[in-house]
Length: 152
Image 1 (cartoon, rainbow, N blue to C red):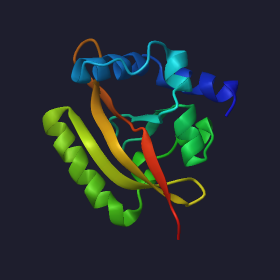
Image 2 (image 1 turned 120 degrees about the horizontal axis):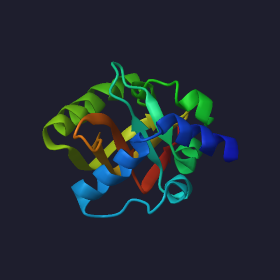
Image 3 (image 1 turned 120 degrees about the vertical axis):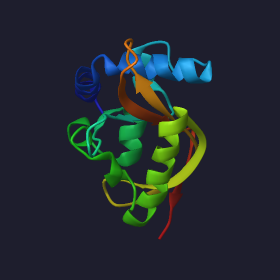
């Protein structure tokens, strides 16, 4: 992933990146990253999608794009449900319903699918709602430090 991917991601996400960072800190009491560059360069994948129906990714940091094996331009056009296998989408939907009630879900695990159709399990993910400075929900994000490739 190159500098163009970073620039495209940051431009596309815009002010929602501020909501991503501030919402995480408000909900967890921890700092996810101290700058947009640190967020991009984090070794932990961070992804975020918008509030459309269906939601589409608007941000993935370098680690996420590498894990999913996809360029920024394609990632931001992808409906986020497509990152889960069809038989895992029900579990993902149940987690998102819980998120609607609680604003944050911790300890989430699930199988995700990369652009090349390979699969990996994310473990102990944190998923949270993003709210702008006016309190309006502008998306949802996830980060995780642990993932395991699934061999066929």
